[in-house]
Image 1 (spheres, helix red, strand yellow):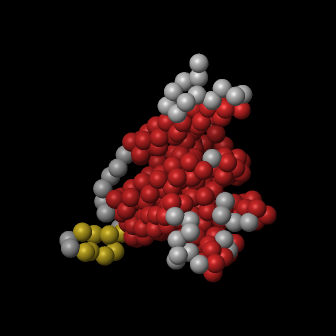
Image 2 (cartoon, helix red, strand yellow; image 1 turned 120 degrees about the vertical axis):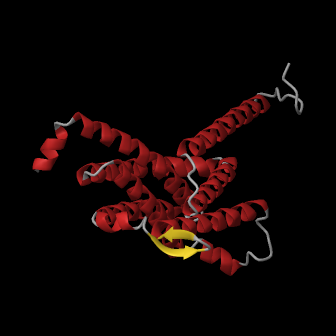
Image 3 (tube, helix red, strand yellow; image 1 turned 180 degrees about the vertical axis):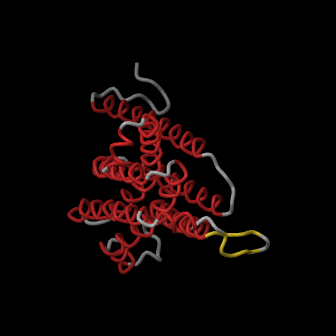
Length: 258
């Protein structure tokens, strides 16, 4: 309790909390996009429950990791050397998570481009839409994003109280944003492809970081924001053409209504 009172009276602690919350929310976007895409493939009655379970698992995992901060710090210590390059447990987790994201995003893109591919048998489709399988996949990515999130938090502050508040606040934001984001993605098929492209980029970023390449997050999220902005313009354009068509004033292809 004394620590809480001390931190509440410290402006530097408030600044650290605000900065950490912003960082955690940004990092949580990746997690939320993956959860939204994955749960949208479930039957309608299971989607909301799967999203809630997935996000709450992320909260439990991050709080559990915060309880073992001393161990988390050691995750950056090299444990294996390959061709003169040392890899820590964090590197291994990031590489494995990046490969999983690349595999999953590529598979979903392939399914979207060629939904009637011969390898997609009824058994495969049932397995893909299985509630338990979706939760397991969400749990695996929760682990990857949680480790990255907590290591980021540890690098920004030494106060456990600040980390806990930031993590809980971030997960609450994820809970509030999960359903609207999932509905928005489901209602706009082109957004699904854009989001899958984001996941591929995030997967490559995780792999690169696992191999020791430092990629400024600002560049990654700026590219994502610009792509989302362009897609937003495309959506506005499509809606305008749809309204014109409904009013009987559809312009010729590539042209403009008189």
